[in-house]
Length: 124
Image (cartoon, rainbow, N blue to C red; front, side, top):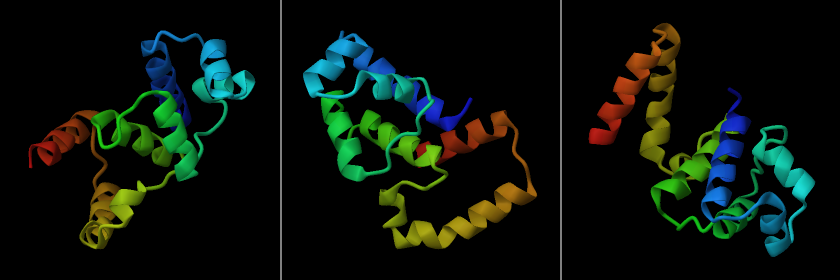
């Protein structure tokens, strides 16, 4: 599945959790329903403008600093093949990225191995 579709599904699930149909949501927040529909279906890539993403997050009632907040921004960055801005600001993380990239290139991990790696990172 394309990463823009994953972002769109997340967006749609958050909107639906508010109990709003697409047109209701768009009317309430003065958004174009055609563009939002394409975004939710993964036909349009997520925006990369931080202020617009924050505005969308606010409309979706995603609390700043919550797990959903980070997921929202991470999915938007991933759809463009980018690292999230907050990680890029951490010099220690950025300095270690080449090692991570080399390791991933030289040894293709299975889905199970990637899941295990994520669990290890989360437990630290």
